[in-house]
Image (cartoon, rainbow, N blue to C red):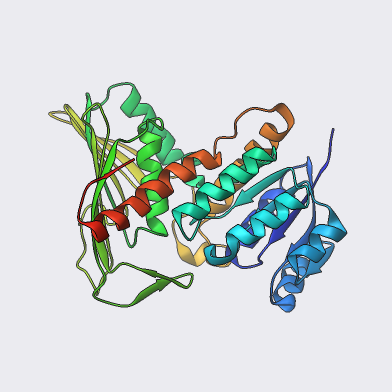
Length: 331
């Protein structure tokens, strides 16, 4: 069995998640962790038994020569790190979300990786969550009739919204959307990973078959709770019922019948979580890493191919452009 050498860049919470995922896969040997704060990198390395810690990405790439790299940095420096890894001959790069600081950066990373034959994936790991797999299976079998619309709710579009938009695409089996119409409010100064984000926003996404997705963002106290039933998640409206799904559960409501409830298998009490991180994130990132290694060995397209993240980024940034230009944006 081939052993793939891996490294994790940035040793925060998500760096810990990625490191655990590599260590859980017997085909991978996690050799290094990098962080601009060397003490943080050394701390994670000591805790998890990672052989090497670095404060400089290029020094690590030169010394370790990894096959696989996870990029868990803030989005503002992600493109530079991804390009450095591509230039160093890394075979597979697994990025955290939000994928990029701008849509142009997202396009450039995907195009450069493709041109160099590098497998690029983005950790939109909720595609592996059992509640979402269950919900899509019920949708596909016609449990709520024909899909009419998707409603999504989350605190902000740039960060949380990358998951909500991606899940909307997941439920549509990644059918390409036609246009986006958006409005953004920036009445308060809010930052996520150093990026200025909206106070609240509304996004409408349209597909050629008439299905619409409407995504609302905002968080108290700046904005009221947007949907009492589903403050963070999605509602799939169909001709014969609706599916309400979030990280904890999926409820299938068929009109005139009793609902069907599917509960997440992961612990929901934050007091039990490892370093305050939802165990679903650990478990689904582990599945994402196993899948990207499978794809690296077989040549198959990985489930979390960067093409999905690029499609989601197009919708996010089209929302901003629609609000700025006061027009509908064709995709």
